[in-house]
Image (cartoon, rainbow, N blue to C red; front, side):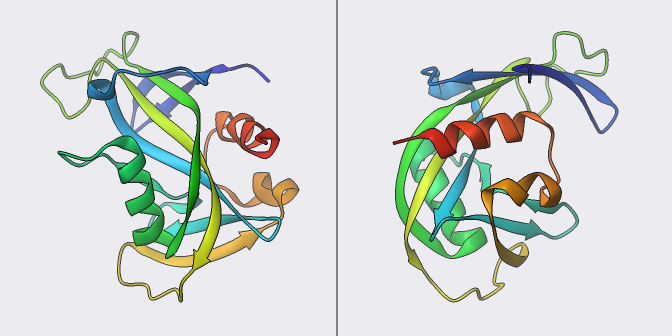
Length: 162
């Protein structure tokens, strides 16, 4: 599996490159995501209208990427735990003819990825944007997740973390 792909996001051609363990300029981080492990299974959440994916979201002003991921994991899945940085996906719009310079995202930005070992699993209350939380065996994730193939490469990295 290659560490670089092209995706079509809402008609935009975007190049994604997986960069394991790469340190990032926090100013260019647009979102954080993570694989959460609990009793040998992976946590997936169903954000309304998007299907099943791993918890994550946008960095809010004043938050570190780590704080963002911990917040998102709690808001979307009601879990808490220890996290470890895995790497980043570079999101590159240089070949995107529809890119808007004054838009929400930078020409080149980064999505950071973490592994969480869940220590506390709280009742799932559906108070935020997620409508379901499920536990999936690692080898079954590829059949459930609604994401690009780099997500499976990152899953392998998360599984291999000691």
